Image (cartoon, rainbow, N blue to C red):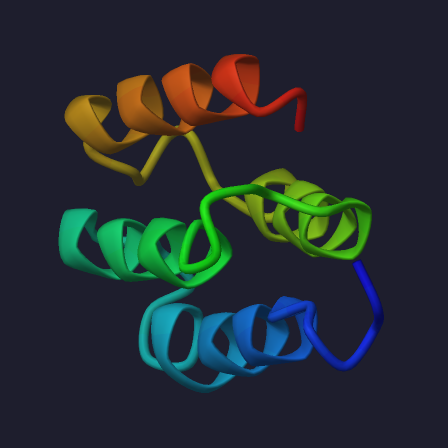
Length: 81
Protein backbone atom coordinates (compact mmCIF):
# COMPACT_ATOMS: atom_id res chain seq x y z
CA UNK A 1 0.00 0.00 0.00
CA UNK A 2 1.35 3.41 -0.88
CA UNK A 3 1.94 6.06 1.74
CA UNK A 4 -0.80 8.17 0.19
CA UNK A 5 -3.33 5.37 0.75
CA UNK A 6 -2.27 4.67 4.33
CA UNK A 7 -4.29 6.36 7.04
CA UNK A 8 -1.35 6.37 9.45
CA UNK A 9 -1.11 10.17 9.51
CA UNK A 10 -4.83 10.43 10.29
CA UNK A 11 -4.43 7.91 13.13
CA UNK A 12 -1.57 9.88 14.64
CA UNK A 13 -3.39 13.17 14.33
CA UNK A 14 -6.58 11.87 15.88
CA UNK A 15 -4.79 10.19 18.76
CA UNK A 16 -2.83 13.25 19.80
CA UNK A 17 -5.49 15.87 19.07
CA UNK A 18 -8.48 13.99 20.48
CA UNK A 19 -7.72 10.77 22.34
CA UNK A 20 -4.78 11.97 24.41
CA UNK A 21 -5.45 15.71 24.34
CA UNK A 22 -7.76 16.06 27.30
CA UNK A 23 -6.82 13.34 29.76
CA UNK A 24 -4.09 11.04 28.39
CA UNK A 25 -6.60 8.18 28.39
CA UNK A 26 -8.18 6.37 25.46
CA UNK A 27 -11.91 5.96 25.97
CA UNK A 28 -13.92 3.15 24.34
CA UNK A 29 -15.41 5.43 21.67
CA UNK A 30 -11.99 6.88 20.85
CA UNK A 31 -10.50 3.41 20.47
CA UNK A 32 -13.39 2.35 18.25
CA UNK A 33 -12.76 5.38 16.02
CA UNK A 34 -9.04 4.55 15.78
CA UNK A 35 -9.96 1.02 14.77
CA UNK A 36 -12.39 2.29 12.11
CA UNK A 37 -9.71 4.56 10.65
CA UNK A 38 -7.14 1.76 10.54
CA UNK A 39 -9.58 -0.71 9.01
CA UNK A 40 -11.27 1.66 6.57
CA UNK A 41 -9.67 -0.21 3.66
CA UNK A 42 -10.07 -3.64 5.27
CA UNK A 43 -6.49 -4.03 6.49
CA UNK A 44 -3.93 -2.54 8.83
CA UNK A 45 -0.81 -1.64 6.85
CA UNK A 46 2.72 -1.38 8.25
CA UNK A 47 2.59 2.40 8.70
CA UNK A 48 -0.75 2.19 10.51
CA UNK A 49 0.58 -0.68 12.61
CA UNK A 50 3.59 1.42 13.67
CA UNK A 51 1.39 4.38 14.63
CA UNK A 52 -1.01 2.17 16.56
CA UNK A 53 1.88 0.52 18.38
CA UNK A 54 3.10 3.96 19.50
CA UNK A 55 -0.42 4.98 20.54
CA UNK A 56 -1.02 1.80 22.52
CA UNK A 57 2.38 2.12 24.21
CA UNK A 58 1.20 5.44 25.71
CA UNK A 59 -1.87 3.92 27.35
CA UNK A 60 -1.76 4.16 31.13
CA UNK A 61 -3.13 0.78 32.18
CA UNK A 62 -3.78 2.00 35.72
CA UNK A 63 -6.18 4.70 34.48
CA UNK A 64 -7.80 2.99 31.49
CA UNK A 65 -11.04 1.02 31.69
CA UNK A 66 -10.60 -2.74 31.67
CA UNK A 67 -12.91 -3.21 28.68
CA UNK A 68 -10.74 -0.78 26.69
CA UNK A 69 -7.56 -2.61 27.71
CA UNK A 70 -9.16 -5.91 26.70
CA UNK A 71 -10.12 -4.50 23.29
CA UNK A 72 -6.63 -3.09 22.76
CA UNK A 73 -5.16 -6.52 23.51
CA UNK A 74 -7.62 -8.21 21.15
CA UNK A 75 -6.97 -5.73 18.36
CA UNK A 76 -3.19 -5.99 18.81
CA UNK A 77 -3.31 -9.76 18.64
CA UNK A 78 -5.62 -9.87 15.63
CA UNK A 79 -3.58 -7.38 13.57
CA UNK A 80 -0.06 -8.17 14.86
CA UNK A 81 0.46 -4.77 16.43
